[in-house]
Image (tube, rainbow, N blue to C red; front, top):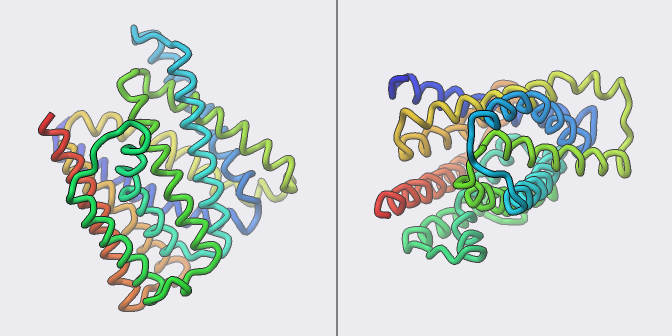
Amino acid sequence: MTRLRADLLLFACAAIWGFAFLFQKSAMDHIGPFTFVGTRALLATLVLAPLAWLEHRRSPAPIDGAYLRTGVLAGLAFVTAAVLQQAGLITASVTNTAFLTALYVVITPFISFALIGRPIAPLIWLAVALSFVGTWLLGGGTLTGFGFGDMLVALSAGFWALHMVIAGIAAPMGRSVLFSVVQFSVVSASALTGAILFETITLDSLRAAAPSILYVGLLSTAMSFTILTFALRATSPSEAAIIIMTETLFAAFGAWLVFNEGLTAIGALGAAAILSAAILVQLQQVRSAGRR
């Protein structure tokens, strides 16, 4: 695979992930957050399971208790973040959700410091300042401009950051596809349990939400994960980091195109500040990795 083709594939992944916010929003018209998260994770698990079996046959990496515990913890962090994000999308706009979710990139270094003691680079503090200013501007120059749904999405960013750190701990263990199957199995089991306890599930509602479940479960989760794995073998981490961050822009464009959402001038400045902060953290992480 050439570097250009890899970058184009990463742009495709970013577009798929960005437009996924539209399907996540639409699904909330028919089913609850637990049901959506549980069904998308179940679908992704079923699709990735055969790939995990092939990986198992080719990989000599062992499967031990630490591997499974890490997968379970990643699944619990994922399901918490996903349910909070979905609940927030009931009232929050797609545009706000996309940019507030991007805050996970800025939060990740602090979670990493708390869990594994990784130092926080001085440049990260500039990203923190940018993200706070950006969030304030996105709310119209006041934090009271955010609704309850926006608050839930912002809270979900912390759990997305926790998930990223746990996934980073698991990366050296190998068997990346199997790890996804383990964590998505946990996500589907816990989310569907929540759906049974707290939500009403009907065939009609599932049928109405089926396009959203299929898009997010198949394209945004299973297929994009496979594409990303191959593309990262042929391009640099710095290019990948910047390209992947464009998912936020795809989400904003899709929200404008489909839901006629828009940003005020001050909100657009806030969105730009949040995106800049996220890219700054990504580049700092790549720079730090290059020094090791």
